[in-house]
Image (cartoon, rainbow, N blue to C red; front, side, top):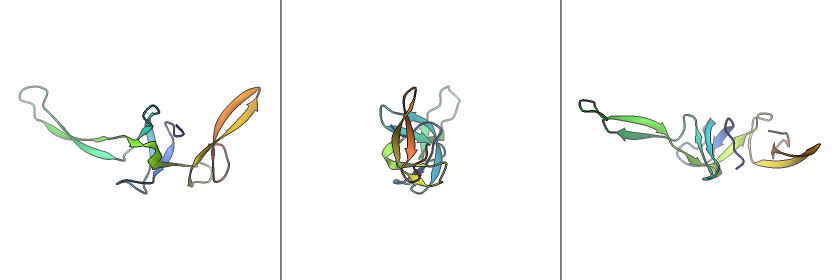
Length: 104
């Protein structure tokens, strides 16, 4: 998966289209991410003890990684992510911005 924790992303589809946020958790096996402050849903929570009231809490839900674009920290544009091999004693794979060709 090309999106990692801590990346700033732009949502390109869904109810939060056009908004940006920081990735707080990534699930590479499911190709899903959780973006801070976006894709918030209301969840009804039952009371745990007698005498306690139930409540409605807002929780962030995961979105598919294909619905976001990485915001390049260098050129400040939303772009796709590519990879480049760098040979520093051993080969190392780094992510690059497809627009400005700089390392992310």
